[in-house]
Amino acid sequence: MKGTLADREAENAARARSAGWMAVFSPAAVPPLLQTAAYARLALATARGADGDDIARAAAIRVEAQAVLSEPGRKFAFVLTEGALRAWPGSPAPMPAQLDRLARVAELPHVRLGVVPWTAAVPMFPLHGFTIYEGGVSVVETLTGDLTLTGPDELDAYEEAFEAFAAAAVYGDGLRALLDEIRRDYRTLAFRPRK
Image 1 (cartoon, rainbow, N blue to C red):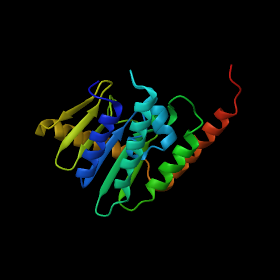
Image 2 (cartoon, rainbow, N blue to C red):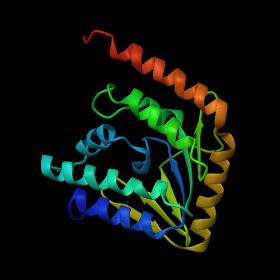
Image 3 (cartoon, helix red, strand yellow):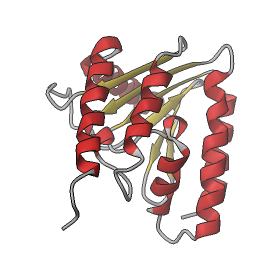
């Protein structure tokens, strides 16, 4: 991994600030711009070789970067799979609050947030997440860093994939119902005794 987690988060925040619009597909985790502080800390704690100070700095940068969601003139599209909402980092305890945050963000007029439910057929296997930024850059997050793709054919493939997953997602009332169902499951899980 190049640099620290905090360095990587600062790069991602700068990329988000420089784009007027973004389209994010995430099959495995809640995207950083949508994470609560508790979720961000737990998610970053799973990074290889990170220490406590680096995790704390990276989480603070990640949460600060979310200010772009409230800036006028920007547009965001997020598509997640239900699996991304049912996988939790470290503990299920922060997940109900995380789902509440998603429901609030979905109400923003310049944000389109959808989730592909597990009951829907997917248009292709969701092999990895990616972000398409204004200006045509797709960034694929890997275990050890980000892969930036700029070739026209690559960008076309990622834009088509995003639209295909977006078409399979639920929005509005369907999204709220799905988030409520997942929230209930987490609350039940939180009260199960550990073995």
